[in-house]
Length: 315
Image (cartoon, rainbow, N blue to C red; front, side):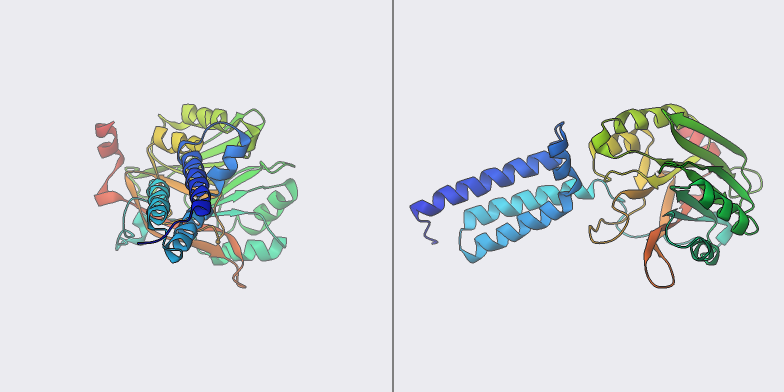
């Protein structure tokens, strides 16, 4: 039986209280900028609680160890709820025309080298963030031969957006939250337009600006009742498990393409979400020839040959 001296009891009590408060701050996300740091660093906090539990185990403070592991388990379940619920990737369909290969990137580095990386990707759709007028010029100069269909709203700020596509757009739209653009375009995977996909690209301000929920509300109002299964992508500047992001995905019935979360890889604040009628057959980071992270890449397909008529019947 481990011996806990009187001077240790105060340390253990303080540690348990701190672990409880930090875990509660991550899960319940109270208002305030300070609490947002706990939200953004939830995965690191999970490793911290696990490490503290290991220290308790070495010290043979078993009850405290069990409590630390309990907090770790709560955080694991909380984070898992924001990732793709399927345990494995979907089996790719045989017909490549039934899949959609999408890349989500933010501008970086040399103009020509960056464009060459995009061209060599052989993707179907490219969503680009932080597009300034000079980047927009180079994109239209280099990409249009391979991606003849595009929507572009450049900006001198970080809010500029572009979507380049090999598939023709059936419809496009641009709407604004304050001065921040959001662009949508609808494409189809088949000639009879039974499998249409609504693409949404957005760049939201960091959560500390206090207008993230309003921006998401604006997007929901604009796209919730539009035709086509939705694929939402962009630099959202918040983690997938934040209360604002969960509001956004729940309102639009979106699923995270990511199978897991890793704080040591790129893409913590970049996301690609898709409608529940679609499934992800591949998800990975998009890198240049030197292995530097540029963004995200996902391959999507419809579930069990679902088409728009099936979707409309269930709504």
